[in-house]
Each structure stands twice: as structure tokens, then as C-alpha cells.
Length: 114
Image 1 (cartoon, one colour):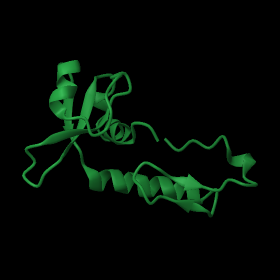
Image 2 (cartoon, helix red, strand yellow):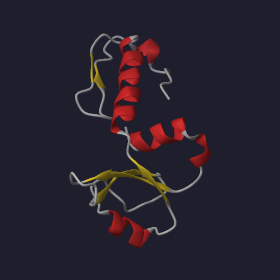
Image 3 (cartoon, one colour):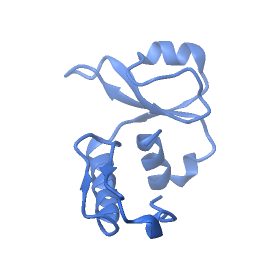
Image 4 (tube, helix red, strand yellow):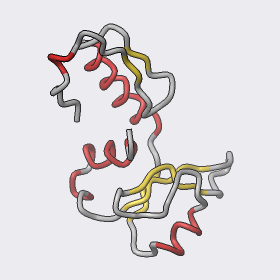
């Protein structure tokens, strides 16, 4: 699911919708090393794990958001619950990477999750 963390932030804080933003995560216990976890879709050329300083050198005028991993897992769990209403074979071992078996479920393909 592309830009899952960013979408979670948009859902939680609609006021940031339409603004360029980078979701950050700390790379060390002290939190001094920041990496890109996610970003607004229009910020082309960024990727997960990119050091914040490199991201800012490309896009200096962005809103910085500290990642809230427990919140993302909560939203992801709700997403999995929604998928399980349509297919009993749903897995979500990795955040933002749901898998499911939709064999025989073609009548549900138009389902909207977000």
C-alpha cells in the first residue's frame, strides 16, 4: 500500500491534506538520526530509509511529521479486519503489506477500504 503512513496522518489530521509532508522515523535510540518513513506522493525521488538531510536538500519546504508506529498498526489492524469481512484468508505480517486470497470473491472487488 503506497504511502500508508502518510495516508494515516492525513486521516488523523485532515488539515495537512494538500501540503507536502515527510513522515520521519528515528534510526537510533536517542532519536538524533532521522530517516524518511513515508512522504506525500508528489515528492518524487524520495524513498523509505533516506536520511532526512538528503530529503530536505531536494524538498526544503515540507512539513515534517514524527511517525506514530502504534497508530499505523492500529489503522492497519482495522484494515485487516475490514478485509476479513470479505475473505477469511488475510495476513498482515508487515505494516502496509496486507495479503489475502480473493479466489471466488469477485463480487467484492469494488470494496472501498480507505
